[in-house]
Every structure is written in C-alpha cells, then in structure tokens.
Length: 317
Image (cartoon, rainbow, N blue to C red; front, side, top):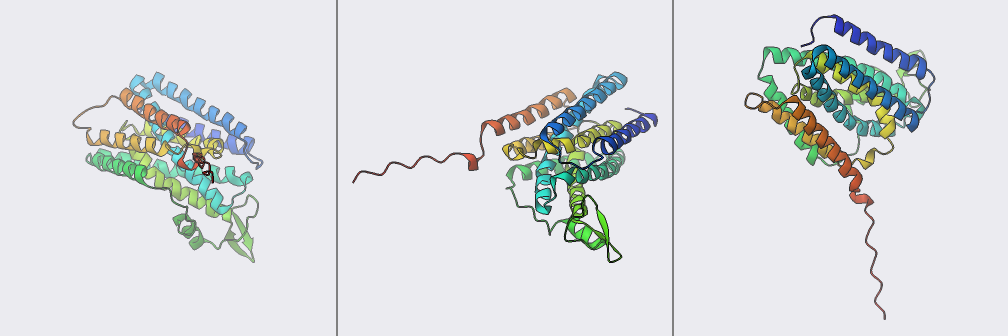
C-alpha cells in the first residue's frame, strides 16, 4: 500500500500543473487538432504514464509497479470505447473541429472529479463489505457479454440524460456562439449547444466509469494505484480521440477484445477466494486480448467493406 498524504498532494499538483500547461499554453488558442499533433501528444502522455509507473516501481516495489501498469492498461483499453461515442456525440451536435478539444478538456476534468469520488466509494465499500467484490465481478461479466452480443445502435441525442439535464437547467440557444458554453440572451443566461455536448460527454464517461472502475479492483485495492492509473488513462484520452477518430471504424472487432477483458477480470473477482491469478499473468492476458482484437480488426475487413463477387457473364444467346 502507498500510504501518507504527500503522494496524493504531489500527484494532484502534478496533474493540475499539466492541465494548466495544456490549456493555458499549448491550447490557449482554439484550433482543430491534427493527426500529427494528436500523435505527438499521445506519445507524451504515454511516456509520462510509463515514467510514473517506473516511479511507483522504484518507490513501492515490483508488485505495486506491475499492478499500476495492469490497471493503466485496463483503463486505457476500456477508454477506447469512449472514443466511439465521442465521435457520435460530436457528429450529432455538429460540433466544429476547432471546439472539440475544449469540450473534451472540460469533460475530462469533470470526469477526473467524478472518478475520484467513485474510487473512494468503491474502496470504502470493499473495506466494509468484502462481498461487494462478487457484485463487481458479476457486473463486469454481464457487461462483457452484453458488449459482445450487442449490435451497433444509432446515437439518440434527444433521449440522452445529458441533453435532458442541460435543458432542464438552462434554456438552450439554437446555434453555437464560438467557444462559449453560456451566453446572455435578452437578459437570460442560456446554454449553447457546446455546453449540451459537454453534458453528454460527462454523462457518457460516468456510465463507462461504472464498468471500468470496478475492473481495476480485481488487480489492486490500493486507492492510490487505482486513482493514479485511472487519471493517466483519462488524461491521454483527448489526444487518443483526435488520433483515432478518423479511423475508429476500422477497429470493428475491438469490442470483442474489450468484452473478453471484462469477462476475464470479472471471473478473476468471482474466483478470488478460490484461485489467485498473479498480476503478471493478468497483465499478459489483458495485453494479449487487446492486441489480438486490434490485429484481427486490421486483418479482417468489416462485412460492409468486403467487395462483392463479380456477376457472372451473361449466357450467350
């Protein structure tokens, strides 16, 4: 266990500094994020994550370092599923590319706060009621099965909780007002469609967190490892979105890999009192499932992309 208040203070100060640097320096001026820029930022966030993992390894030992890396890989792989939904959200609201980074920045900042509260609640539940681990395991298995067999659905904007919540709190303008979330119209504070999109992003992450956060408790009960691995996975989600948004449809088999990961982790939870699966084995299984689903997606084209067989030549008269 990583104990004491100072690791928490130092980590959160680091995160606030990185976010301030991101928004105040590198993205102070709104612009459409190119694939090249997104690739560079993705490399930066992954490098920072691995450096932090190395720090955990050196300070808390090999077991803690392996747990951190496994938890990070779980959260990172499951966060890819968010990208599919972000693409649908921005398309549904017709959010200009120039403002998408702003929505994701504030959306992820809100997600960090919500996830911190959920992780704290999860830790307290597990400490007080040990049997909750079986509830988490069953939830993950059911989610994995549903993910594997669920067909793709259209994203219904009007039926979303985020839209209903935003419209209940504020009147909504019919058009965008630049990068602003709120404007005053006729003396009344009104939300713009950009704010509504932000609310949908927040609710979406909350729904995904219900699945992803219990998964990491199969690896470790250390709240510091759970929290920090979650934060680094989420911090890199923005750049990963801009990197993969244009090609996300090519990873059509990824959901089966993610489903298998959820079932594996859920099964590990349910069998935690019967069999102990070493963290290194969990890390290898998760990495193998994720890699296999990505490779299969690239090797096997979607059914819609398969070229039709040529029609036979007409029989001679």
